[in-house]
Length: 218
Ligand SMILES: *[C@@H]1O[C@H](CO)[C@@H](O)[C@H](O)[C@H]1NC(C)=O
Ligand SMILES: *[C@@H]1O[C@H](CO)[C@@H](O)[C@H](O)[C@H]1NC(C)=O
Image 1 (cartoon, helix red, strand yellow):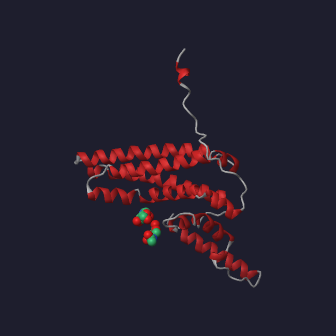
Image 2: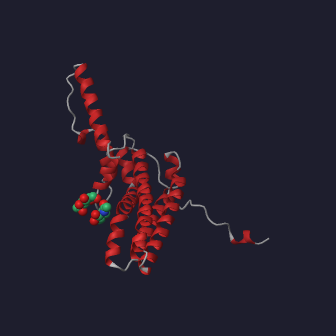
Image 3: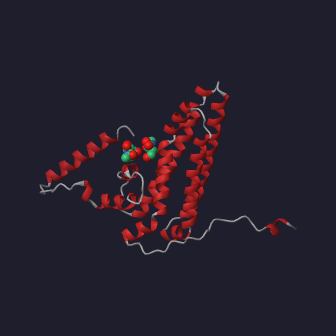
């Protein structure tokens, strides 16, 4: 991770060298005018609160395909929630002597593990193509909302102000990226219009239901 800027700098130098070698009068394009920046903006703009984390996250995803970018945002959210779980395990020893704090951390960890189970369901629902995603649209939104709920529950359970701040900061990126992912799915109609994707989003619940009660009788 840490040597990414170096790699990028190297790549940039290589590209510059190549460009000079073939002596093309290369005009420098401002990133903001590239198709990639437009694709990222077209997605992140539906987030009503703060688009900066979304833009920052997607800026480095090497595709202009809106669906791939949307997947990448949710994937980044899931990865961050995994980091949140590790973060919580990491601070346990420090709070071992305080029973309330230890219980709150354990409870938060349990909630975020449920959130990760919801991500597994989310990926099943999104499937591999846009048709599956559109068919399971309601389920995708529902799982993302549930993931947000687990983050709120985690924080609601923490009474101690210092511990609250510590946990809020530690799980913040995952929480915010999950919320951004929800906003993006919530605004998917707008996004599809922006990109001219003519697929209808199914607002009906397609999640697997428990078998009817009669199935339990023999
Ligand atoms: C938006 O979020 C970024 C990073 O998450 C933060 O640095 C910035 O202060 C936020 N801006 C506002 C207006 O809240
Ligand atoms: C998450 O979002 C909130 C509200 O916009 C902001 O105050 C906070 O700094 C963000 N946290 C991170 C880690 O980006």
